[in-house]
Length: 219
Image (cartoon, rainbow, N blue to C red):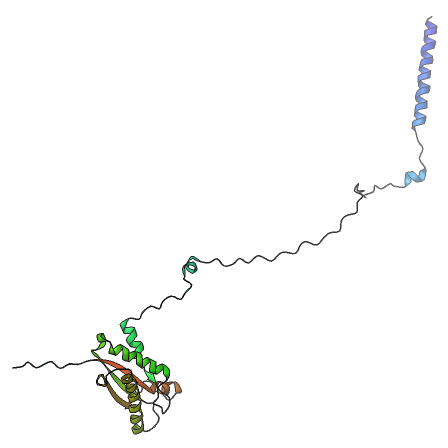
């Protein structure tokens, strides 16, 4: 009996060896020597699963110019009235300075322009006013450096006279006026330039307070 068991065990071992060797032969694969020697390099190509062609790149949109904001109206501008503001009235001193500006003449001339005549009319109106009745006017005629002394004295007298005439025609009494000619004796500007000579041909207007002699007491 023991001999039979030993035979079965031996057969089982042999059968197992046969099965193991058969599996090993089926699993082994011979390679071609050329294939062994040829190296195989891995591919670096990446295949995308997206089959749609890439869309063409569109240029970036043009930058829009910056918007220019309208200047904000300041509070001061908002408060300004649409109509012109009324002029500020002159003081008495400023008015006198404006009305007594020198009257300039052309070369060898003793006539007034329209603007000069208007200035003298306003001066006469100012002096006629009751509050200015204590003022008299002294008119000086002047010339430039050219010409003889006698000629310039006569020309200066004509210039002073034409100013006095314009004032009296505007209503100012003659007894409140005094005219005098200095010829070329009192130049306002030295030199012989046209600027200096034009400023020397002039009529000066000088306001003087009225001098009243004190009344003598009666016995």
